[in-house]
View 1 (cartoon, rainbow, N blue to C red):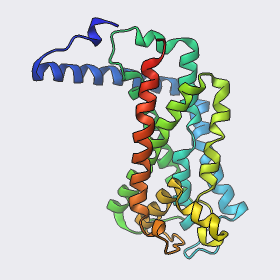
View 2 (cartoon, rainbow, N blue to C red; view 1 turned 45 degrees about the vertical axis):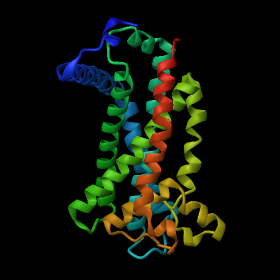
View 3 (tube, rainbow, N blue to C red; view 1 turned 135 degrees about the vertical axis):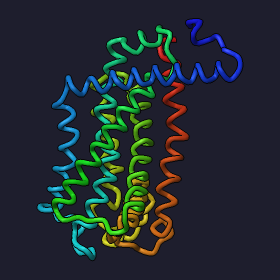
View 4 (cartoon, rainbow, N blue to C red; view 1 turned 180 degrees about the vertical axis):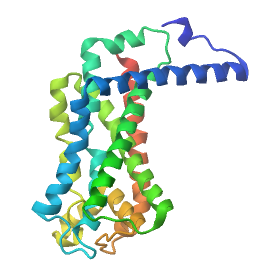
Amino acid sequence: MSAATTTAVPGPAGAASRLGWALADSWTMTRRELAHWARQPVAVLVNLVFPVMLLLMFTYLVGGGRGVPGGPTEYLVPGMLALTMAFGLEATMLAVTQDLGKGVIDRFRSMPMAPGAVLVGRSAADMLQSVLSLAVMTGVGYAVGWRWHNGAAAALGAVGLLLLLRFAMLWVGIHLAMVAGRPEMVAAVQILVWPVGFLSNVFATPASMPGWLGAVVEWNPMSATATAVRDLFGNPGGATGSWAAEHAGLLAVLWPVAVIAVFFPLAVGKFARLSR
């Protein structure tokens, strides 16, 4: 281990210096990930277009959200925004496994940089892409007739909940990518996201499902975020009167925080054990 990572600098100035060093290294890693966007525009475009295709398909072909007051788009679009935050992790997982396979992360770890800069840079780039995905999906939703009704402050609160869900799913993806270790394993791990996404109230109300299934769906973390976001946007939510539905805003915070509390230390610990 280099002296830069082991020597403590006393006093506030030392702490400030270490913080500035960590932020600078993290920004360098973020710029590295953003540079990949310019070299791989097709992959970025696919990540943006795929959720749009799902929204259009379920709006015009499959008929999700039928029978909900306000029309299907009022119900579907907030749910699709939540689903978008859970999907799209494949690019992050591929990037992590490719760096592992090429030995890039080992080289970074041998350099005098802040230990967490690689993970912070990866997560920052992913969150920036998530903001872009939300902007595209919001624009498409507006084009197909969706509207929010509770003002800018509530809309920003909804966006905050969506990004919190994404941040939680991101650390799940980073940890599973390091466990998988190889790019060819990413597809198998990514399949695990689909049941979580579709066993939710994104496309249909729990009231339209068998009782036992509706109860399971309402406690899905994605359902909590989708319901809370619908409430903040002023869109119909197909409320069932259950505790989970009535406290969706609380669950939309608690579920992601719990996931982060589990998978963030797992990911950091796994990264620290690499190449030992």
